[in-house]
Length: 140
Image 1 (cartoon, rainbow, N blue to C red):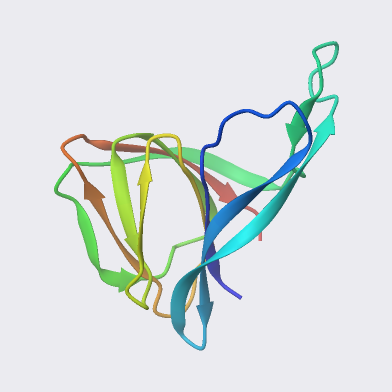
Image 2: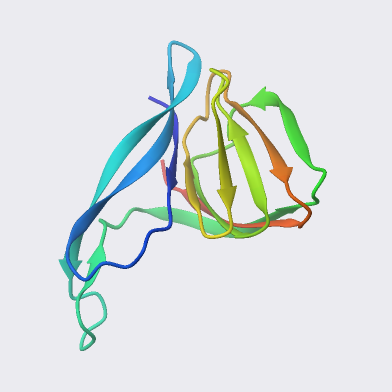
């Protein structure tokens, strides 16, 4: 199943927890958002520092920066060119699923893009600032 996942920035917690992720999934050719839970477990991430809440590692292929002006728009629905994580560094953009649902991704938000086939999604930069995204291409 192809999907786009987004992780909301949340306040720091001092114990193991889980996060809810709005997820853009494709079923029978139409994409839509749904909530997916991601477990975080306490781990010795950077000893001797205190443990942190950590999700499982995933394989990544390469990384890059992606940017666009405030008037950029990908209004024609399109699939993603590859599986990738987007982390909004500056500006804000909106993604619209083929069912018409729109989610916004301001600075600090993560988006896991997995809709590499089918109708895909449309996207556009919103607001007055240039958009800057840190992109991580995923293996597979």
